[in-house]
Every structure is written in structure tokens, then in C-alpha cells.
Amino acid sequence: MNIATDMPMPTAAIRATFDKVKALAPALLDTTAEQRIAKIQRLMKTLMKYREQIYETGKLERGLSPPDMDGELVMLKFEAEFIAKHLRAWMTPKPAPPSLMTLGKKCYVRYEPKGTVLVLPSWNAPYVIGFLPVLGAIAGGNSIIIKPSELSPYSSALCAKIVAEAFPDGELSLIEGGAEAAQALLACPFNHIFYIGNNHVGRIVMKAAADHFASVTLEMGGKNPSIIDKSADVEDAALKTSWGRMCNAGQACIAPDYVMVHESVARRFTDALVREIGAMYNPRGKGFENNPEFPRIINARHFERIKGLIDDARAKGARFECGGEYRAQDRYISPSVVTGVTEDMRLMKEEIFGPVIAVVPYKTREEVISYIAGRDKPLALYVFSKDREATDYFIKHTTSGSSVVNHNVVQSGTNPHLPFGGVNSSGIGRMVGFATFNECSNARAIVEEGPPLMDPRDMFPPLTDKYKKQLADLIGREKPIPSFVVPMVSAVIKLRTMFSSRS
Image 1 (cartoon, rainbow, N blue to C red):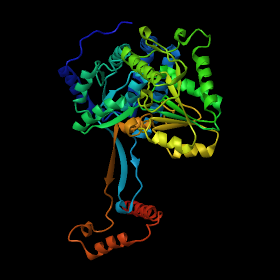
Image 2: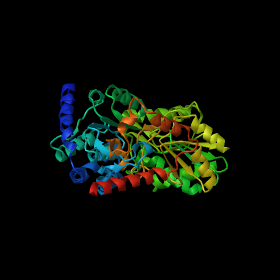
Image 3: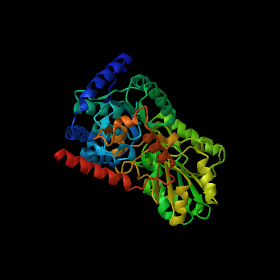
Image 4: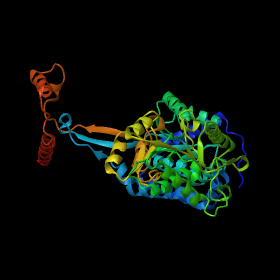
């Protein structure tokens, strides 16, 4: 596959592109749900037109097979269909219930576009991560610029072709380039920024957004724990964890980074994990490295980083139950299960983002909670248990962006009714379904004055004794006003207004 070799776009040209895209935003304010849906469908049709080339980019960059890439495309397809089904309802102003202070007034929320949106996706799933926020931004009526990661250059070039074909007017534009292009874009006054990646760059994005008071949605990784309770179905937990950690060669933001296993089942789980990894990725016994469907690491820099984690753990006494091998020429890291880990090992401090998982035995629940709490809040957390009380305990005493019970890596992009995101260092804001639309919209509260219920001058200085007493009585109430009173009075006011208008 050919890849564009154009020189990086100069900063002035990037600013000019931004100005053009921003100038298109005001006209989008009046677009209907049908018009926005048509744009989403046009983008999806263009994506599917290049399906074979998408397969090719996945193979070139990460060694993925067509079914792996179809997994990305099907998530986008379902998201687009969900938006098409619900967008009209989302765009309809939402009436707000009355309050004591707004009796007789019409209150509602209107969702309006934020304006111009920047999307900065990561390289590990460039189509779904890149275009899912775009779908929500289009649904919200925004103009958009997307800058794919330079670490997936083949995908980036293909995305540029897709965007140019689907949106020749530039309402959705794509800019290729590396850190300099990203910095030039972050200097532009966007209204909202999506960033998906690591929290080091996330900090840079937040600081840049602050210069323009832009809102942000940040989805970042971290060290995601998986807890294997003593009551868990060990074989089932091992099967699912093998896939959850090793899919995409571990290059997934929600993959489990380490497994905390009750000491009574730790050995059995570890053996089952090794066995299941072999069954999945070395079924013919010819070696993981000879399986054409086992993915590769994205580039040499990330290969060296993961290799460094393996070498550091081995040097400090970790035991490799399987794996621990690597090969630089094709960026191969073997599926690896590590035990005997200690806190001074780099793989227990850094996000691994590769096909390596650590197994950590524990004795008590409190030990698990303390261990997890001693780290940044994770993007994902998993619990394997047959004990409802134990499951509830682990969920209640931990926090994470999302959690799954008795499975893993099935919560992202699989249910548009579930908002997806992180907590603090693992993310800010939510995506998927209405959540993405909401992130790209200003929820504007509107109050329309109704017929006067009293002389409005009673509320303005000089305040009457009657009005002062009313306020004092409200503050002095020991019990809140019964919940049925305000709706009941509001209904009476509406009826009175309706009959007075007829007369």
C-alpha cells in the first residue's frame, strides 16, 4: 500500500484550515436531524467502500487479520445506526419540571452545537477511535478537524482519503502530521477537544484547551486490575482474561494490566491462563511467533519499551510462566504471564500496553482494595466471582471508568446506552451514544416568562414586608415543601392560563 510522502503541513496552513472549518460552523446550527444523519450515513458508506484497504492497513501496522478490523467497523456501524434512531429525540428541546421559583414559567433545555471540534485519536484502533467521536460531533451539528496518530501512517493516509471523499466541502477535515501538527492545532481556538491516548499528552491537551476555555473529553489508559475471587470459575476467568489481555497484542486501553488472584486459586488460575493463551495463539504448537494471526507491536519505539519492561522484570527476579521472548525485526513480543512481581519492577509501575500480564496473589479483600487504591484510578476494572456479596464489595470499594463482572474488555463500544470514559488520570468526560452527542453540545437552559402571578414590582427594591416575610418563611421551614405541591400548583396555573386565553 502506498503512503503519502508530502511534507508536513506548515503551521500557517493548519491555521488556515482551522479558520475555514470554523467559518462553516454557524451554518450547521440550523441543520436538521435528517441532514446530520445523511452526513453520518455518507461517511459510513465511504468507510465501507474502502473495507479492503482498511484490512490492509491493519495488517501492515499491527499484523491484524480482517476479522480484527471488522470488529472496529461493526462498532462504528452500530453507533451510526443508534444515532440515526435517536438523534431526532436528542435534538428536541427537553421540558424541565417546574420549581417553586419558576411557577408559571416555561422551562426547557435546548441542545445546540458547541461549534468546532478537534479529534485527536490514538493509533491502536484508528478507525473506531478516530471516527466514533466524529459521529457524535456531526450529530451535534459541529464542524470538525481530525488529526490521526502519526504512529499509524497507513491508516492515517486512508482516513484522509475517506474524509476528503465524504466531505469535499471541508466541514469535516483531516490534517496529517506528528507532534508539530498537533501543537499547531492545539493553538487554535477550538470549542471542544477529544483526545484518546496517554495521560502525559492528556495534560498537554488540557493545558492548551485552557488557553481558549475549550471543553475536553479525555480517554486515557492506566493499569487496569482484574480481581479473581476464590469463588470464581477459574477456567472461565482464565479463558476470558487470555483473550482480554492478548487481543491486539495487548495494545488496548481497557485490557487488564495485572490480575489479583486469591491465593487459594492462584496456582490453578496461572496454569489455566498459560494453557488458554497457548490454545488461542499457538493451537498447532508451532510457536506464537509463527501464528500469522497474532498481532505485532505498532513500532520499534514501543517494542523497545515493552522489551525493557520484560528485561527489567527478569533482572529483578520475576518468573515467566510463559513467554518473555521478543524479536526486533518484526516487532514480535510473545504472550507472557509473569509471577513473582515486586513493586520496584517497571511493569508494575507503568501501563504495559502489550501482551504481558502480571499475576499477583492476595490473601484478603482489604489487601486488594489497598493495592488498587495506591495507584491512579483505572479506566477499567474487572471482577470474576460467583459470590454476589464479594462482587458487590469489590465494586463498592473501588472506582474506575467502567467495570465488568465475570468477563473483560466487552464494555467499550458495545452498548451505546452505556457511557464510556475514565476517572481523573484515566479520563474526563464520556463517549458513546448520547454521551458523545452531549459532549459536543451546549445544554442550554431556557426560561420563558409566563403570565404574572403577582405584581413583579413586589420582587424588586424597595422590597415589601410581605415579600420579606415570604422569604423568611421559606428559609425557616424545617421540612421541605411536599413534592406534589409544586406540580399541582403549576397545573392549576396552566389551566387558569388556558381558560383565560380562551375568554
